[in-house]
Length: 305
Image (spheres, rainbow, N blue to C red):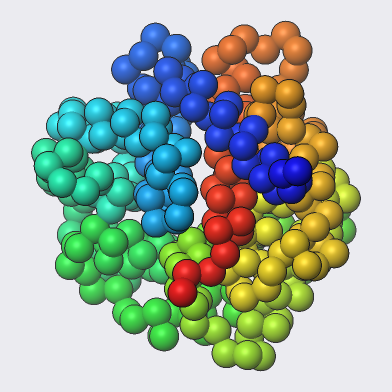
């Protein structure tokens, strides 16, 4: 009988595979907001990229991978990033980093990088978190940059640095702090492929903070954060399924999952309503469902040898 994690993964992947017309920014079913169109396509590409490195992963995302290859053949795809100037450079770099192997994506990659100002690839004026993100995608894209090595960034990162106290109703961290924490782990650990480079002491402190934030997320049905924090536990060297907090989070996500495999929002408070259109439901559900699928794929595949 499939485990809860496997059922969670299978359902999420089935929903994502059946929603590809919504991920295609050139489809009439895609969200009306250009920013959401671009972001959704990039997140789908990340799922495909990570799945391609796992045993059995590529086959389960075959339809999504085919769509990504189609989109990355279009040199006009990066033009969608211009609709959200605050993120355009980041999206361009991510687009280049996640370009499919081979000829597919060559022209799109070039067009995306042409939109990235060289100053964006320098440390000037950026937080440690931002520099870690830029370095991760620039290295993956093979782009020259002047961001300092990870060894210099780790002690300054949200995984190690002290955080100002959060309001009581937010848990140990504010929502932005919590996402900075999880994303930093994703980048430093290359989504479960490498050691994030923390000392034993720093790793223990980060692990305790993740556990406390995960307990809070489960207690308040914050599904998106729960999925990201479970993956963070894995990256920090823990088997989430053998921890009370990780196991509770997987059960929490399984209870939230609808019969079609989707997770209907970032949290119970933000879940899609029964009156939402198909497009509105997708906008609310796609990110958390995708993150849940990504987490389940990586955790269930174990650590690379």
